[in-house]
Each structure stands twice: as C-alpha cells, then as structure tokens.
Image (tube, rainbow, N blue to C red):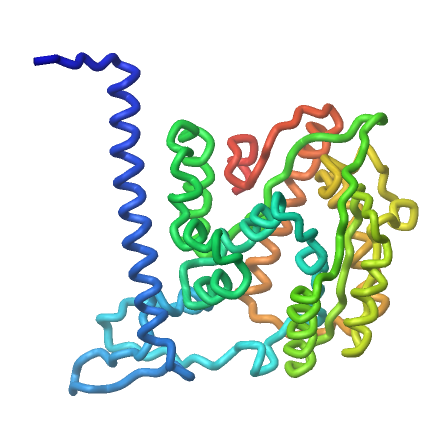
Length: 355
C-alpha cells in the first residue's frame, strides 16, 4: 500500500481549495435566493403591504432581496408597528436626471471572436443575479459561451492561485453591495501616465446590425420617457480603421432627435495631454479625468437644462462623494505624474483618513 505524504505547500493548496469551495457555495446560495425572489415577484407591477392579521406587522408582496435590485429597501425594525409611506420614484414617474449621457463604446465594440467575450464580460459579469441578467445572457451571448456566463466558475475556476488579487476585489464589492454606497461609484484609478513613444491601439470599430437595433431600442426607450439624452464618444488614444463609424452612430441617434458629441480625438479642445493624462489607449488617468469632467460639466451646463430637485439624503450622499474625491485627487495626480502604476480605490490604505 502506497502512503502519500503531502508537503506544506500541497496542504496549503488543499486548504485554499476548501475555503474557495465554501465561498463559492455561499455566493451560489445568495444568487439563488436573489434569483428566486426576482422570479417570485416577476409579475408584480407595484409594491405594497397587506394587513392580514390584527395587531401583526403587515406582509409585503416583495422581499428585501428583490427590492435591493432596484436600490429600494425597507427602513426600520419590521417587527414594530410602524408604517412608512413611500412613493414611486422611477423613470416612469419623472424622477430622472436632467441629462442622461450614454457612452457609445458598448455599441461599436468590434465583433472579433477573440475580443467579443472580453467585451461582453466587462458589463454582464457585473449585473446582479436577476431575470435581467438571464435575459441578457440569453440574448447577447453566443450559445457556445453561455454556460460560462451562467456559471462563472467555469470561466474563473483557475483564480484560486491568485487569491491575493481577487479577495480584495470581492471584499470591496461585498461592502458596496451591503452598504448600498460607493464613494467613487465603484471606480478605481491607475497612477500611470504614457511615455512619448507610446503607440496607441488600432481597432476595427463598427456599428453592427445587431448593435444598431440595440441602439435604436435604447433611443426609443429614452424618447418614450422624455429623457434628455446626449450620446458621447469620450477621449481615446485608440485609432479605428473606420472613422465613419461615428457618423453612422450620429445618423441613428439623430433620427430620434438626439446628438452625438464625438470627442474621441478632441484633445486640444478639452485641454488634454496625449501622454500625461492617459494610462492606456482607452482610459484617462486621474489628472485627465479631472480635466475632462470639468470640461464636460461646462458643456452640459451651456447646452442643457440641468435644473432639478433632489432629496436631502441624495444631496448629502453626493456631497460626501465629492468631498472624498476632492481630498484624494492631489495624491492620485502626484503618483500618476511619477508613473508609479499603483492601483488605487476608495478602500486603499492611503485614503483611510478620508473615508
């Protein structure tokens, strides 16, 4: 009989595998619970309370898990005899931002099979488990790839040996999910700038027939809701083999009365440096984001009616987010100018004093 003796390294791998399996089971159970709540409430067109027994708390027709998908929640102790009057506050009821800006990147991604999956995962992997996610996978993902989108472990099962990289990411996502708040809206920055000899990517960007239909559906929905909409192509160092794609997009959105603000190479207009303000072909660094945000804010103010009324709670939340970003910007820009290539987010130790 052979006796296998495991070394410390092998034992560590086994322990990590067991831990990851447990984490996966917990995540799967949470996903199933959320999905079950969404399925059970699929036919609900309004939310309310049913008073079924004298002296007992009312029964709601939607669970807290289901309402969380819509950034709604129950407030207070549900065992107390307290009733909170709520009002519908969705797009259909006029609670909309003054101007909805839509980045057109998602509509003009190239259809190359080698990059298609990566482009899809950028957004589908971040959709919470819900009927919306299932329908998105079924509609947008090629059949041969759908299994790995339904079960992420089929794609990411080898990540166990990179536990040091993805555990912090999952921790951040968990905190944001549980608290319902992110001071930087989930965005992180890379403290990097480009060298003078940087060669930008060249990509065959096209507006495919399928993406044109999605774009038209988006425009029609915004139009039906009476939403002011501005489509954007933000500054990119990426070059395309078909510059006419932007004219194609402008023609489609123009049919619905909307404009495309094409800024993909408007560096001089905005005041951006092609090297100092970028981290790669597609993304601005902190310094570039500050410059572009200020420019876009002035443009929107000059061309659109931005008047609106917001709750004290929402205003306070945005003020807190703005204060945090204002405090952290100098350090981010300093590290980017030094090209340290550090990845920073709202939970980074450098920002602990400002959280």
